[in-house]
Length: 261
Length: 161
Ligand SMILES: Cc1cc2nc3c(=O)[nH]c(=O)nc-3n(C[C@H](O)[C@H](O)[C@H](O)COP(=O)(O)OP(=O)(O)OC[C@H]3O[C@@H](n4cnc5c(N)ncnc54)[C@H](O)[C@@H]3O)c2cc1C
Ligand code: FES
Ligand code: FES
Image (tube, rainbow over all chains, first blue to last red; front, top):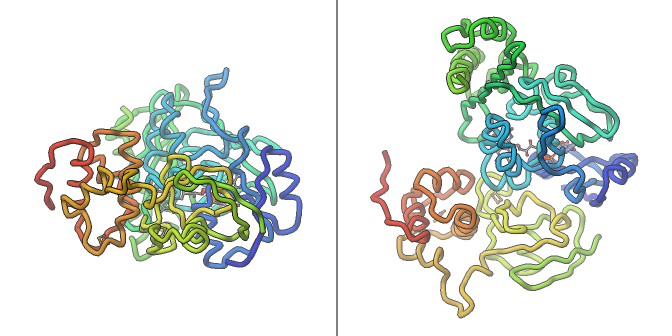
């Protein structure tokens, strides 16, 4: 690793101020960033740790029924405390392994927007709102392709607000070496329609599968899931071809609908 | 350089560390607690698992500066007060839960974290919890047996399916 200093502010305001300096970068749980630093793929001069900011941690239900999760909340805490949204709690409890879940945070996962990460599928399928120190960003505008998001330099995710669907489930076909999703599908059925978000498959990162949404909105059953999308534009690597991933999108969607019904 | 103060195995320690000092390096190099092993240094193998405020974490994927003010537990703090092996360690010995022993500190620390939250885990829960702890020798069955025994349960005839 290159050398850098670590600061541990205790409020969002102090963290934002610390991030205003050149080449400062936020540090969430470090489960992605520390390996990146070890490979010298990032060279911040200051890391601003978010782990001591109490106002960015915790899970609670808002007056309008949405579930609010602090941006610095660990996967383990979401797994234990998001019981009013079981599909989300289950997703968090199945990220990586227990030690990764003790440290990794929802804000770090969404900021990173790894094309195979689990939380982006939950946020997009739920129609969540990403709240930062500066603004509120609807999930539909937030994800902008592999590792790309609407966040500006130095902007931090302080909270994520999830509308809770009537029924929902996440099905992850695990890539056993990395423990990430080879393909993961999150299905959320709201009173006004169904949203389906797919992670791990597309070269453009997480996406909504609109054909499945339309079909499932009129008939919420596994039989209604349309034929799998085409393999064009799907990730193709040593773990699976684009066609294989496209096939898995169909299979995982059916499984998610079956689990949610 | 920053000053960090933490409690390690019940003793308060204060040291100056660099920003990029990993908790694993701090424990091994600064405190000479070399029971915490570094197998991969890429957050895959779990040999470096320690407890931070009671939770299992991979010490190769956390900075020492982030443990400022924390309670840290390592394998060196696991034995009973009289120096005898604790119930998990003894069960690993009794059930041949180790061969070369390289993964064992991480296995024991993960097992202790599991049993704290779930005192009577099923075989499936144990295997699931150990997903991030890799062992190149035992084939895992005897590790699972040891943890079943340490939690006071009958040891099943676990075998590869
Ligand atoms: C062995 C292993 C298995 C894993 N398996 C899975 C899996 O199955 N599914 C999955 O989804 N993920 C998985 N992960 C990734 C894990 O979920 C990470 O925790 C997550 O991707 C990053 O979160 P973090 O809090 O650790 O962020 P960090 O690593 O600290 O940061 C990641 C990036 O986000 C930025 N950042 C951090 N917090 C914020 C914030 N609040 N606001 C703005 N920017 C921020 C950082 O500057 C950095 O660029 C795995 C990781 C490991 C090591
Ligand atoms: S050395 Fe930390 S996970 Fe392998
Ligand atoms: S006993 Fe050798 S790696 Fe587990």
